[in-house]
Length: 324
Length: 282
Image 1 (tube, chains in turn orange, cyan):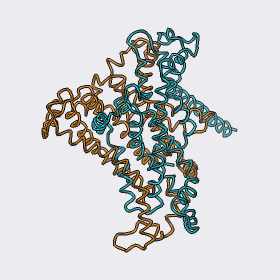
Image 2 (cartoon, chains in turn purple, cyan):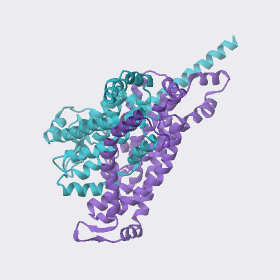
Image 3 (cartoon, chains in turn green, blue):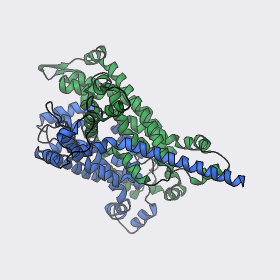
Image 4 (cartoon, chains in turn red, green):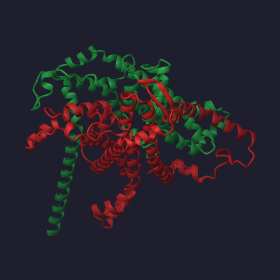
């Protein structure tokens, strides 16, 4: 499966590591050579860290500062420190709470649906059949598609009320035309996001399925366990950590979903997720202070999710020997 | 006798289940792929046959829509996308490889803390950083500038690249590096001459993923560019039109825009899995 039983890693970890290979403990004085090695390592690491700090961390700090200011680009003269006014305004308007609800609903539903579909597809693909590689290739395509292109194709080609292919299929079944975009905006966004992320879930779960040892499965079948029994008592427990990983990474990516909302629904009908709300406030409303407050609040929401996620991730990575 | 027929009956049942499952697999696969296939088909249709109910299949297919797409200046957007994606990916790899090297082979204090700092920046919403970035770029007169977008893509993809390349470096046998050190190789030789060739396929996979994410990026490009530095994702929306039909030309533009990444992804699909799972899975 993962790093633990890879032969090279086994060699590396089973051998007592030499001092020069280990992170030097703080209390033991280092030899000249070791000190030089640490310095070189820092030198290799710093450029990447510096760029990352500059491009991602500094803007967050500035956002935090801006969130305590009154600053509307339409009224340039009235800039100043206002304490928590922006936060009070943001929370009092109630848009934040409804936006949080939209975000949770869309991300939750899309994550659950794409996980179930991804699991089903992974199980179907984890068998030998003709042109298996082609089926897999076709199935991963939605994830490779540019999200903006996907959103436009779904909006106009698939879900259009008059000429969309989905309504045409429904009419063959005798169901009336559905105005997806206007009547069911939340479902429309969920359909598009689910379509995009199902291949992602599928790929991770398929990797999990294919890492099961065939000997164990064979032994189970020799012992008289049927396919259902084998699946429940062997495959599912083995798959658990892959499911966790897939959900975790999927949710983190989905929390930032913006393209289908900006392109298809423009935040109407309960699809105003946090990123879209912030975009609207800052770049349509031009209210920098309030938008920054939304930014800080969405960072807090993400940190809550990410802390839980990171802890889980760390556990998974530790179990798999990725991090020592 | 009866035992034999029971056995063959069981075999027949088993093979019919297999046929059923394969049929289901192909059915679902084609349903999933249908929007992509339909986009490509529509791209070759005349505008009058593109958005009809019921759908038109038999019509005169041509390359006219692609000619219209490139006639409207789409080539410029593709070049901007290509520049931002290629340059940012090259710099990301140049920064990420030494960093990943330090985190896996060279001793660094608390490597996991540094690693988790890297990945935590990936978790924070871009939306929260975009306002100051917009204001600063505005002050510097760098809005609608490909270089500015490129720098942001470097920050966006760096964490993922570090994680991914590190996961490949962890597999390099220590003996190889130790042998190089005994031979008196310095860090640069050790890194570029000895280790890089071994992990080259992994580095290529990481580069491909960074390229895909940069090529497909919409949020920053939509906010920070307008005409000169417009990249393809936000430019696609411009093919929607309030008057008249546009689906065929839109489909042609979308097909052109997704083609490079879809083909690259198909070719490298086995390695993509590992990159997407940030090296937690092989």
